[in-house]
Image (cartoon, rainbow, N blue to C red):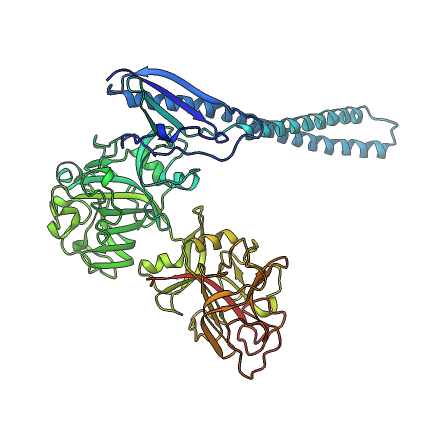
Length: 630
């Protein structure tokens, strides 16, 4: 091959990528790539041509150290960018420290001045030289403090204008064919989790290059196949053939073998210690799986392959980097040989041998019935399960270990894992921040409902309990069935993974049964039924309800007038106006005042509605999904 010209182009966040789609082609899988470069819709308000850093060099791509040369140049450029920002940060810190010192001195002088003035008054002296000198010193100090404060403000403004080191667009140009390959080195990001939440464009499963905590670039394979549940980074992968010769006697905590790989390879790969430490710092769980790469190639990744041979464990329960022993560890979920359990205690072991699940010496209580007298997910030579276990079915069968964020965004994610006890659980919003919610798995079997709001009748008109389009919150972090409301972004996160909403009356912890007498439910996708939508239904429109029961009557798949939002920002409610109730059937002869509100607002109400039959009567609103659709 002829010499190849290498151009490294760094663009700030405020610059749109001008890369042409027609010159962008797939790159080799061991380099860290995406077919489409990250772009930004934000443009610098002060400059029509943001700065671009370009380095030109020529090197032979067939050289054994070509990737090293490339990565070293990338690091050098990023360090130059980061240095300016670091210098600004240091200047601000020094100025703030100096201000504090001057303020302390000024306070001490004020005390001395006050003391001198008291002496002057007590002795009735006409003047005091010491007092005059102190006043002069205090004046000068106050002037210095004011000047430094202005300098700090200016420095902060400068600091904010310095761009964060951007992703590096690496374009390798073959001078003979003039073909171009666009590679994306995501060295602005530190992990798969960081990339997923901060990338300006959508990401897909594949290999990326990251920057670890020590400033070293490393390649990692990211599993983004089910980001609503987890984001995983490949920690290790080996075939049965290689496990027998290299991996079986190498634990995560003690092994210093030389087979740590910088290139991701399903047949023989383990992330280097510094890289795995960096990823582990941003992870909450690890996962063991079988045959995630069906034919020993990265392109053959299949997240659903052998999904019945997988275990997920919290790093708080068992940390393979810091433990070298057998220990009973609470395992979030495990599926193995037709058996499964959630939050069960299993015997995980590693000493001089590889990490593995060892049921034969299981001392954990209650004792698991999963497994038999074999080793699973490692240390196979001493007790291989053989063909019955996918990881050991053939010499080319592979075992994977992953580090990641095992997220639960809705109560449905817990129900999918087999959890079915109603109560408080931790979920994560779209940014990955955890918060507690109340999950109802009991009132309607096969449905997971997440509580988004609850209030008493006499508090329904409070400013916190207005339209769901308003960003109000009550008792976030303390879910309860009488006074509670999530932030809007939390509701929207739940909405993204849910299909239905419902309203209930008077539910209590320990008594979550519903009889559908005071009950409303609809799909978000139904006509005028998205109660979280920014665009509200027009006046006089009807909402298609899946079911509504009220005042002793009910209807299914009926269109009724629901009111919410608008200029008055009213809470969602059904107003019973005999002349305008849509397809809802007229109530029998019960005491229902004209224009009675149901499921919210309660300016006027009927005592026959259980949400409003007393000042402390409660209304609950939920977002949820069925375990199986259809």
